[in-house]
Image 1 (tube, rainbow, N blue to C red):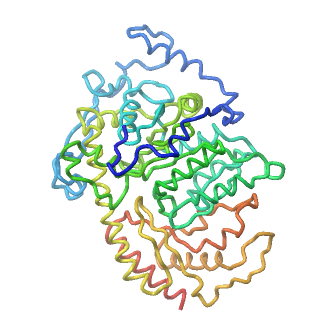
Image 2 (image 1 turned 180 degrees about the horizontal axis):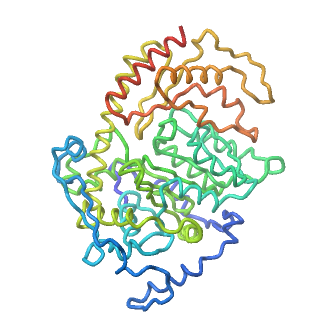
Image 3 (image 1 turned 45 degrees about the horizontal axis):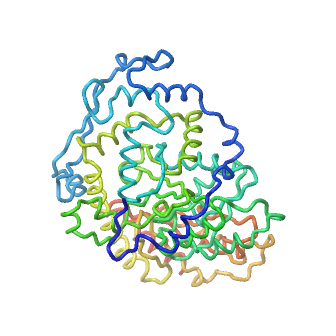
Length: 506
């Protein structure tokens, strides 16, 4: 179950209203997904797993006695340390060895991990992640499938739900590496306006209410959103906004792709130490982490994407998708006929780490809390140095992020002598300021000074449907900067930034 603080109601009017009705999931499938047949070999493989002791002479696996490996040892931090992240960084803490074996008992045998599997991933790992989901989100009637990280999962979701000519919804600034993946599929993006607190629900509702299918094509039926530490803006949606957005999705029959790799990296949490002592880290953290769209998903319209990239290591390329069983089956069919199942080494590691011989779920959550404390320290250092070296000039400002890895820095171009607000658009609805040109000039100036920050133009979604109003190039006066580097990187980088900014303006 999901553990909420005593002052938080676990049932809202939104929740009650959303329990009614039935969603036609089939109508949301792309033509490709409707036409795809199950991989017949995988279907037989799954059937062979049902009855123990079945003699399988139909598979193409090398026999496990011929695997040139019989044991894998993973050296990990001891979770018994008071602050495991700091102890691990300083080299003063104890280490634990968790092991996977081919022939000896363990959480996930290498016989299984290194053999061919099904697209959903191995049951031992899916069960462990479903248990983690249940403790944190308590999603009703949802299924876990593994992925090769969120990028793999998202591209498959786009293929699952989108046809050429479809329009999907997203924040007006978003992770363009992912939105670009949908463009070759013929999917157009419709940007939703944002403010300092993230996606604006009223703008989402305005777009859907004013949509004219005669001139704009089919009304959007998918919303792609990054609710925690939105990439690139670093904003985190409040509970009130999440409930409002979900209600809109319910009213307009929208599928929500909840891309949430930064969910566990939350700051200023105020974790109750007595709850930790009495119930453990999982319950204590679950009570203060943001409430996900998945946790309120009584309609089965949320496909949630989680990843180990930000909390363990990016190169693991392992994540998990939580969705209703109908979408899960279609997603698994796509995987069975494309990338195949996630890699065995990553699955073996996760199974041992979350198992009784490793950290367990509660130890994993203790690591998460320690990780949050370290990233919060770096965030605070970044903001302190920013105030001293950058904000003092008045040429740039930034909000303190509640979560994640990024600070969204606003460049106050209205103070620049060459800033123009009377530019004539070269195309109807085009930009009316020279914001994009000045920001490109500043980016190159920073690069020449030895500093790279990501310009907002990298993440800007251009509205091709005419629903947004003002052109997004008039609002690209931002940089995305990360605070997860070393203290030296933060100090030196912001010193260069402040100096170069003054040169640019003066």
